[in-house]
Image 1 (tube, rainbow, N blue to C red):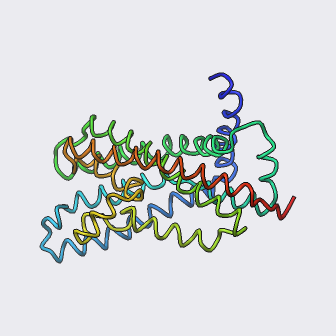
Image 2: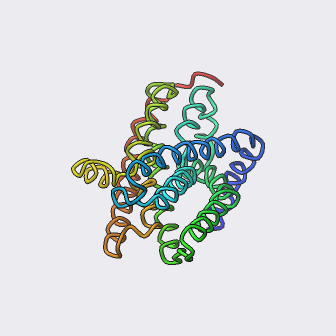
Image 3: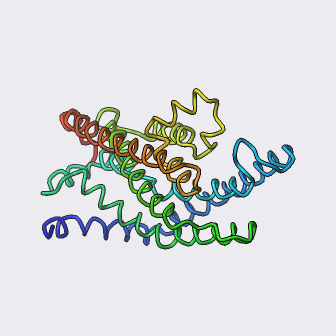
Length: 272
């Protein structure tokens, strides 16, 4: 444990320092997400108004507001930029220095991101959840916060981050073959945004498509934690959804290791 602390905590500190140094990028990322939420709020309000202001596919307007903002918050919390980091390091040649260090490559990237995750948790996620609970109280006149659902949400969000990290790690290793991930990276983010339920709740999808998407790893990255927090799942279904997340986390761990074994043989440093 002491060896892990000495080797990898510096990577975590570097992750925090990177966000602090480039704080305008960090703030722009958060503010951009909030603007998107407000745009979607007015869009969905128009949908609910045209429906008579009642329930729409099992969601009230209050539910939709919670979903929009919490989904965006969860997506930002579980967002992993490791594929971008790998791509940039391969382009400028600095990947060679990382590989020369006596550390596990996966863990070095993971701890580098965890610093940023903890910072986002403190200055963005917790205040957002508090604000959403105040909003629900003002609308309903009742304290809706459920401590058990919150703890299960935290557990699900941790699994969601692991899945997101592993998916992006697998994608990042593609840079060993194609050298530049910029274009396909944009495509990847768009596809994940749709399949994870960040853009449209999966509950609004056609039944067959919804069932397929809920078993894919992308639903575990945002939709599952949010639905747990909102109390949309019963006890059995929560365990089932958490089980799906665990299975995907294990499968993606194995897949990332297999891709790494092939990718490292294709390393061709362009810069440096």
